[in-house]
Image (cartoon, rainbow, N blue to C red; front, side, top):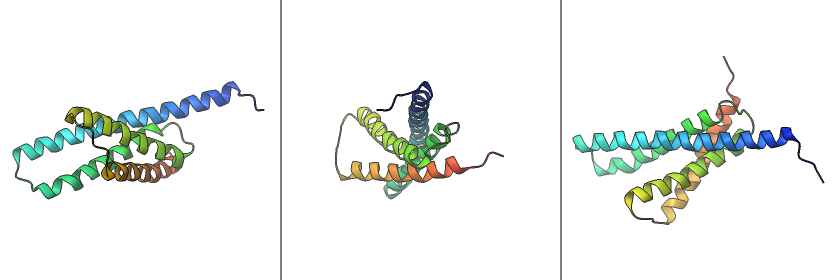
Length: 134
């Protein structure tokens, strides 16, 4: 049986704090991006075909910023932490935007979004952890 030391507990705590920070930052970036895009849509005549791809880009950028800020000081396990940030961001964003919309719709799109968020988070986590400090 292994005995947990204060050092491992602190590392676990800082890892979860980094993940939570990344999810919150990603959610804030996403909210700002969606609001800006809605503002642009309101005053221009952009085609409806553009909305879905722009939403995916906003999600990807939000996850990147969330992973980058979340793992800025915690430079360990970029793949796993990136996956967790991307996945949890997707779930929390789904809940927030569903509450704002007033309807929850669990379907294939949500599953695809979770997969997309996890993959983008993994890629960003690998990149962010391996960036050299200048």
